[in-house]
Length: 174
Image 1 (cartoon, rainbow, N blue to C red):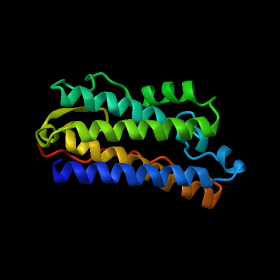
Image 2: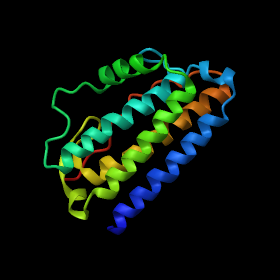
Image 3: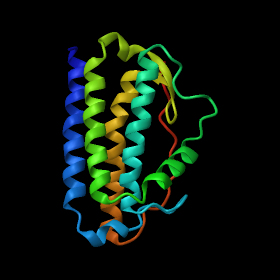
Image 4: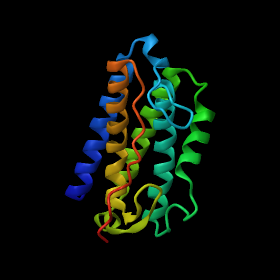
């Protein structure tokens, strides 16, 4: 396997393990802590549901782009998608969500291992980055969780949700 793909695969695996360990370490009372101030104001349980749905959606996106497809449609509404997906998963027990995330991350790892170095250069539309290389979309998979976990830690530390910042994705150099 290509060295860059090995690094991405290794990071996905290690960050996935850290994510699982983190969620497993939370006490029962933490799961109701509100994390965000926008949309449906997700609590920690809902953020974990978001991780599960994001893994599924991003796997579909990677398969689409790596097989020569366009990626996300131009009219794809990421916030609407996230709200709908989380609402469909939020009733699951925490243990079921953790298991779903774990099995999804293993499946995603196998997908990454099936890719070639030339796949990393393929361009496709990512719902957040817009037109980008597949390598950037793959790296966002583990970075995405790190960002949300940082926000969870802030919310737990302060007992307050994290204020919404209207952050735009970085400009792409294609």
